[in-house]
Length: 73
Image (cartoon, rainbow, N blue to C red; front, side, top):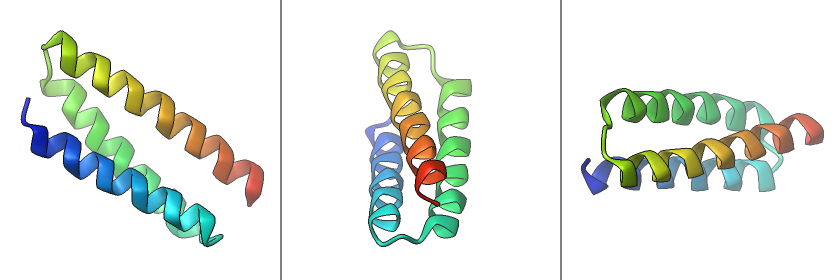
C-alpha cells in the first residue's frame, strides 16, 4: 500500500483533533466521516499484514475521537 494513503489519513486525523480543540464539533463529525470512509477504502484494497495493523490503529483512534466528540458536544 502506498504511504501516501496513510499520510492523507494522518492529515485528516490531525484536522479532526484540531477541530475538537477549537470546539468545532459539527465540522469534526463531518471530517470524521470522511476519514472513516477513507479508512474503509484502504481496508477494502489492503492484503498486507503491516497495512492491516496500521489500519486497525487508525480504527481505534477514530473510535476514540468519535467518543470524545459525542461526550464534548
